[in-house]
Image (cartoon, rainbow over all chains, first blue to last red; front, side):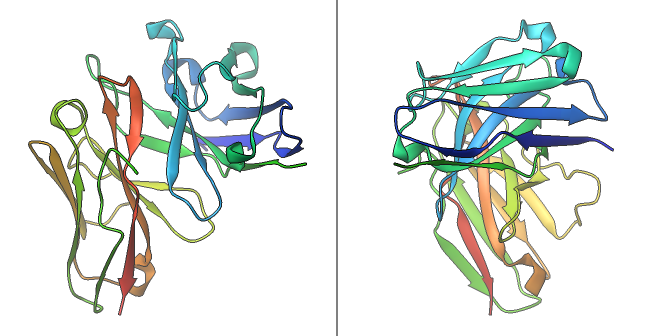
Length: 125
Length: 110
């Protein structure tokens, strides 16, 4: 079965750090773009960042709200991807989802066809 | 406030049709594919439409997507109580180098 499973969420104090994980099964992460998308309580979807596939050098992009604080990395041996979050703020409190996208050559998005169940990050003192 | 503009809510009776608009600009909708997502309460988003107007396997043909210029539209026909959910449009913005989502539209079946 093709699926993504997030883990590693929890409670962290403002200014702290946390790493959340996204493990893939049923397919190879290296063939796909992976996006991180978050949803604050009662709010809409907010894109956090992206890791492109191996063919595109695993390059990354970040939303302005997290650039310089969040970093996406991959471990091909574990078929997993990580979101390292530093200097956390209360406004980073959200459910964090990872999602798969597979854009056609020459395009930047096709649509996110596989989503994880989400992991909750709470930033509070 | 989102760069992609959606109406906050739409409603209709069972069996009727609703449409949800998503308005953007040339740097996003105008030059990139649009996708649509359904989010039922307490669950992860689910892809309904990809590449403007294509349905993934398992999505009924009651759901349709279209794009014209810098706007896109999701249509739902034969509305059912199970369609009550939040719906989001999404695309890439070439100027921002970022994925954008609309603010979301809540569909209510009267």
